[in-house]
Image (tube, rainbow, N blue to C red; front, side, top):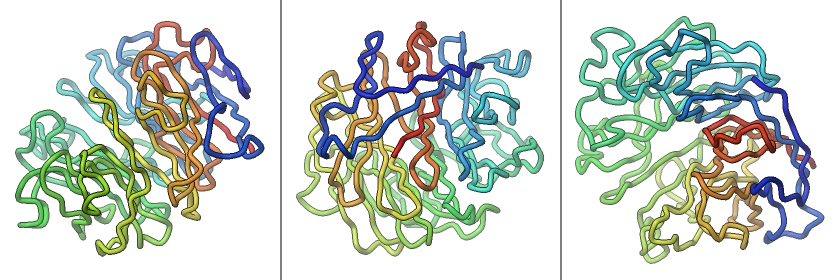
Length: 362
């Protein structure tokens, strides 16, 4: 673990630009960024999917590294929890083989973690190795499997991309399974919502073809959903099938497309949106050159207003996969980012995936 940090404003460092230079807002509105590196790993694959509690004091994430010596010697992905000051690291899941466990979402109260896994964590519950949604207490007790499915697409078949609502009363997730019979018979990915005990499964999106819907999170009243999709949900606004950011009411009405981009042929578009509790600010990742600071098409962390205006690029990395915001505090002032960039210069020269904490002011 490392307590290394750096305060960055308009600085180019060791081939990595934590960049606030060319944006669609006035310079006076740009934030100051304080970046801390929370993990410092030596395994090739690294650590990913960091998610915060509401206070920004706890972070859950997944890692392919043996962070608690002997706890993950086979190097599949496991779920970890630690304090954001770098102390108190614990390993919550213990499995072998497969991809393992990923996509954690830490409840706002910091007490439970929802995640996806292709392992048979509760013997007999997932013998086919499909990705299923699980929940566990932060002390390692209370493990429960919430979904039970078979089959699915090649790759991440089944259920992934968990997101707790701000009150820790609902979990949204993406699935290529027909969880509400007849609602997803074509087997692309759609967005679903359920209670933390696995009951009350509701299908929120109904798409056909393509990827469908990747990730989505509810607002503070559980009445609206923010999500990404490569479908032309408002006919004619996404005919190139780039991944774009949308909002809609949970009853399916009121769809609004927030981003309108064309990604390079090798790119994907705009993904993994998160919003603040007041619904006014959205964070997301993008491989599109939205502000003139991403000509190489890396994945970078972005911020914008919830009407799609005021786009700010928060990270600029060169090479590797880039940087992605996976967790924010309700006020949007503290971010958890995964990156294979050397965001704290000299601390990630091997360019493995690491977990960073970013604090924004104002």
